[in-house]
Length: 438
Image (cartoon, rainbow, N blue to C red; front, side, top):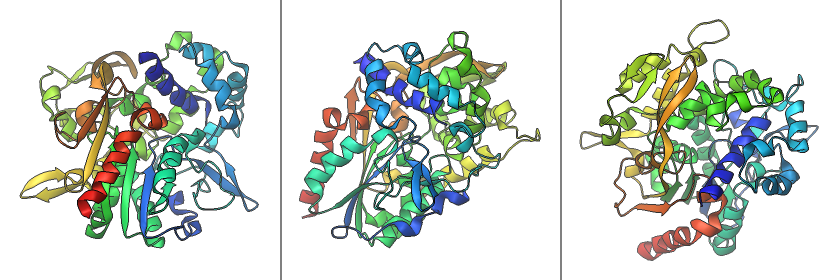
């Protein structure tokens, strides 16, 4: 099982490595009326998961789907679980070589210091627009999930994958989702959210009481409600994030390191995955003598953490001045908290949310010792290899009635291998929902 988990995670991280917001609402008007009725089951992808592209001479040209029909061969090459072997693949190395060109995918996908897209024409793939490709997400990540749901529920629900620009803010993505729901006049929706998609769905619910009331059920799969330290490590030390030893990386890979950092460090979305105040207040964090050690500074509280990271290199723009992305991410995170009887409460606890999580003892990043913008060591806790369990449950205990844990199932497997792991539970939750309503 650990090998399968490793393969699934490495696969998506390799896609990041070899691939390359005012533009978020481009193409909104292209969404068509629903095929059937006023109910919808909407799959909301995680970070990296949505298909992105540009319009060229009236045709949609995929940009964030770098492997395309080469995926079967790539999957086969991952058979031994050795990511370094994958990097010896001629196809992969050819793609990496392309990343060194002036119009490489990493440069096409790059973001400005203010978090806006360098290429304003990039837009999400439209599930309903004829001619748009990668509608099931990048590398068809959510196709299996979609086909299973569509086969069972298409008579009563519109089923589709909601693609959004994961480089931008989850708040902007939520506004796009709101536009889609309103345009198609959906009166009731079931949101099935993977990873960062759960943050998008939470933002959608927080936009208005009307939106919250439309959500019949929200099922989240490994959502980092309280953040995930791995999101922080992706910006600080991309090679550690990808599980690679710097000295072992071929020089051709090393030559694209700056382009990779320029994409990651300016993404609003990834800043919104950073550990939150609520994560620092969890008992598991309070029990530690220090959570992070950043360039010799011991970090125990959230305020100390913010003070330490605003001075780090990734938070400096091209002019050497501090950017505002960390502060902007804090403001977005605050939008999903509401007052319930005088208690600051995440909106996920005010709607019908089911928390599906993966568990793997001691396999999920919790804290780091960081020296000169490199992770020298880390501490691990129980989670799905990406999100700590108490972040994925939004602070609920594992025995809560609306928490469903899968032992030794990784972050990507929760959805990419939907039929094997979470299909039966998901179907049961949807079916029970309508038994309760009737």
